[in-house]
Amino acid sequence: MFKRSLIFIILICALAIPTFIRMVKPGMFTTQDFHFFRLFEFDKCFKDLQIPCRWAPDAGLGFGEPLFNFYGQLPYLFGEIIHISGFSLIDSLKSVFIFSLFASGVSMYFLAKRVWKDDLSSLISAIIYVYAPYRAVDVWVRGALPEALSFAIYPLILLSLDKFIDDEKTTGLMWFVLFLTALILTHNLSVLLFLPVILVWVLYRIINMKKYKLLLKIVSGFVLAGLLSSFYLIPVITEAKYINLDATTLGYFNFRGHYVETSQLLFSRFWGYGASVFGPEDGMSLAIGQIQWVIPVLTLLLILLKRKIFENKTFVILFLLGWFLLFMTHNKSIFLWLRVDYLKYIQFPWRFLAPATFVFTLASGKIAQLFSKYKKLICLIIVVITIGLNYSFFGEDIWLNVKDSNLTGGEEWVRQRSASIADYWPKFGVLPTEVASDNP
Image 1: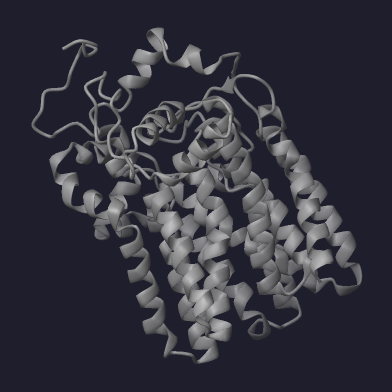
Image 2 (image 1 turned 60 degrees about the vertical axis):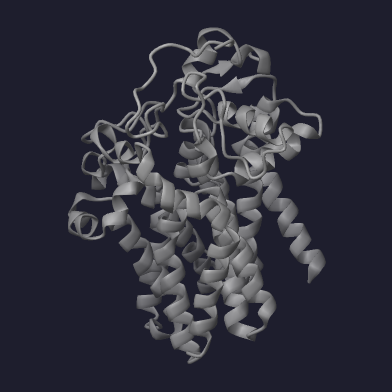
C-alpha cells in the first residue's frame, strides 16, 4: 500500500513540474504584490530576535509600520527558514511558491484517496487541482503567496477532520487544530473563504454517520486553533481600530465592483497579467477552468443515468457546494454579501474561486469510479487534457534578471517601501510623503 502511494506521489510531483519549471533560473518574475519586501522585513525581525514578528521598519517610507500584526506570518517564516539555509531572498520566495504547487497536489491526493478509496480517482483530483487556472493566477499573475500556500493546507484540514469523525481518536482532532492554525497564520481571509466547506463537510459527515456527540469536540478544535494563533488574532481584533484597515474595503477594494460574469467564470480562455477592474473587462483570468466544472457535470449526468443518486451522496454534496461557492462570485449573490458584514473584507468576490476550485477538483475524482472497466483510460485522458489545456498559463509576464541587491535600492526600493502605505498607518496620523531620514 505504501509503495503504491509513493509511486503516485512521485508521479504527481513529476506531472506538476511544468507549473513551476520557468521559475528555475536566476531572477524573479513580476507580480502584483510585494512579498520580496515582506520577506526582507521578516528577515530583519528574525535577526533582531523579534519573535513573533510585529514591526516592519522600512515600511511606510522608512517610518515603519506594524505590518506583521495584521499580515499572516507563516509563509514568511517558511521563506526565512529557506533563506537562512543559504538561499537568496528571491530564491527563497520562489521556493515557497514551488512548494505550494507540489504540496497541494500531494495533499489533495491523500484527501481524495480517503474520500474515493481509489488511487486513479485521487490522481485525477490532484492533477486537476494543481493545474486549475486560478492556481496559475495566484502564483504567476498576482503572486499571492499566502493564498497559494493555503491551497496546500485546505485538503489537510478536511483529511484530519474526516479521520477524526471516522475513528474518533484525539490524534485526528489535534491534526485538525494544527492545520487550521496553520491556515489562520498563513492567510486569514482563506479561513473565511474555506469556512463554508468545513461546516458543510462536518455537518454532512456527522449527520450521515449519526455521530452528533463529536460536534462539541470539533467546536473545541476551533477554539484551540484560535488559542494557538492568539498571538496573531488578538492584535488583529483589538488593534485594527487604530489603523486605516477600513481603507481596504473602500474605493477600488469595494466588493461591489469585482463580481464575475458567467461567461468569464465558465467559458473564457482569456489570459492576461493585468488587474481586476470594475466591470467585465478584467486584465486577468477569473475562470474556474473548463475541466474543473465540466468533469463534475458529466459525473452527475452519469450518476443520474444510472439512477444512483442516493448511493453517491458525497459527490452530490460536493457538487452543490461547488456551485454555491461559484454563485458567491456572481452579482446575484449580493444579498448575501450585504447581510454578512465580514464578507466585505474579502474585497474581491472572485476569491471564492479558491474554495470552489478545491471542492470541484475533489468531486472530479469520482468519475473514474463510474468507469470500472476503463478506469485507467479515463484517468489518462483527463490528465492529458487537463495539462494540455492549462500548462501554458503557468509562466511569467516579464522576467527580471535581478538579485536581492537590485530590489533593495534605488527607485524600486522606494516603491516597495511606500506600497499600501495607508493600510497599516495610524488612523489619525498624517501619511508621509517623503522617505524618512536615515539619521533623524
